[in-house]
Amino acid sequence: MPLEYKDQTIASYGPWWIDYNHAPPHGAGYLSLLCGIVTRGPLNEALKESGGFNRFIHENHSTNFTNAEFQIRLRGELLLQGAQLVLLVQSQQNGICSGWVLTGQPIEVKEDWSEQTLHLTPDVRQWTSLGTRPDRADMYGELPLPDVLANVNVNLFLVLFPLNVRPKGEPEGKLDELRAGRDYRVWQASLPDGYVVVDSVSTRFTS
Image (cartoon, rainbow, N blue to C red; front, top):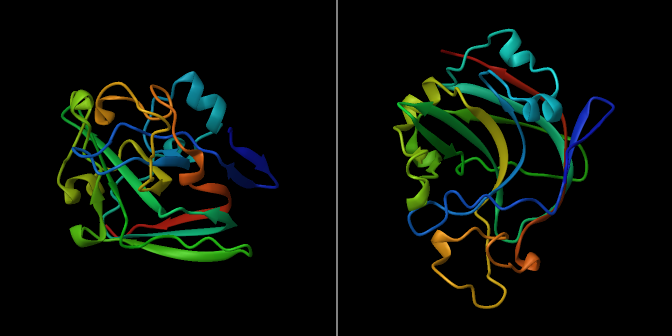
């Protein structure tokens, strides 16, 4: 479902699309993208229409998030079904897009507003590399975490990860080569649902 903008907040409602680009066993797992920000342009028409004016790009803010503090104020209700709400950072270098999720610092969603701070340290024990499924290796892969944090030049996203993708029926073919939710049906009851409302996001750069 599209994001809802109201009273200077962003609301993301499930059910969400399944991102199958990092399907196991070669990739780290399936995920759902809730909302985020593109950190470098140019922006295509679809991104302009969905995200509006991008102050981060317009004001040319740093893409070096090494040891940055990421603060977010949010509320909502989530049926996680084994997933976590975590921050994803992505960088593209030498033609490869590498994504890392901050699984060591999951974000708690409550019905009332809460403010939480994430510490983006280059400690691999705090992060999980998404990797790639074999047929997307021309675009996705793994770069060293310090290199990614030093230049987050693609985007930052709030994501639900990992998803418990259960095929409905018997798909024809290997699951890691098929697109969950498109090439075969999945049990929606096994996937997260709910909503998240974001009121404010700020970053304190230390590098």
